[in-house]
Length: 288
Ligand code: BV8
Ligand code: ZN
Image 1 (tube, rainbow, N blue to C red):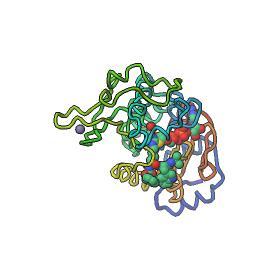
Image 2: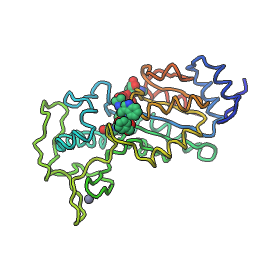
Image 3: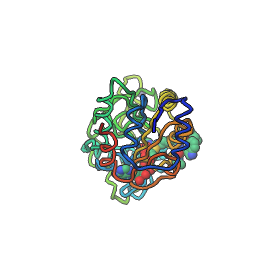
């Protein structure tokens, strides 16, 4: 079977149509990856699960019995910035102790090995920075990063890996407490150090109900419009606009392979589905 890989190659779209039957054959995917020039890896919280970082909707995903969507939103921050900072402080400290797992490392080494013959783009919904720590270079962080702050007054964005980010947050943020408010006063939360500013800092993260950065979306559009093969790893495909990306790529002829421990709403539409923990399945798929 000759596989043509090309964005606008009618054959590949025709082949896609013919090979509509979903596969879980690693050799078949590796054959397609071999011919691919542009590979996109779209990741969600599931890829970091084996690094000990709780997913949003799996076990440990709730914080003080609160769904992340109730904390990762601008009105929660307006109402009780201390509580939202405790939530992020808890996740910063957890991620600082976490390490990239074999899934993150498999992607980074695949990108390095193919630096001369393929463009690999990691588009991640995650804010934990573990892809970069694994060595991946071409990363689009759709939703920002736990270790960046943004001033609510002057909008300055800075990298900040201080642990704790401020004295008042030290020892706070335990997920097991029943408290649903914070005693931390706003004046004791992180503030902008610019002498003429002093504004309250927030995590530089896209919250629910907030728009993604247009430049980030532009880079994403370019990557998905040129993609030959897309790997969708560890996402429940619930959060938009990221949840729409694999369907867009599939509809325009990309081969889409999903790696998850259970099917997601998108699974039936994809060409490949590899069930299992991504720290096991990704190294199998990406070993040349
Ligand atoms: C926006 C930062 C325009 C926060 C996050 C339609 C169009 C546009 C918007 C919407 C729409 N419908 C609804 C919306 C609004 C909303 C949305 O999508 N809501 C959802 C809940 C329905 N979208 C937005 O607000 C976005 N903004 O579109 O702006 C706009 C504005 C206003 C009104 C309309 C439109 C902004 C969304 C960004 C939110 N911020 N993160 C933070 O991290 O604190 S999203 C958050 O969820 C995380 O980034 C997370 O990554 C992401 C998605 O979740 P997953 O990564 O998929 O994680 P989850 O736990 O759900 O699933 C884990 C998966 O891994 C599971 O499938 C599991 O089986 C699997 N797994 C587990 N272990 C493993 C594994 N797989 C492999 N191996 C394992 N070991
Ligand atoms: Zn400022």
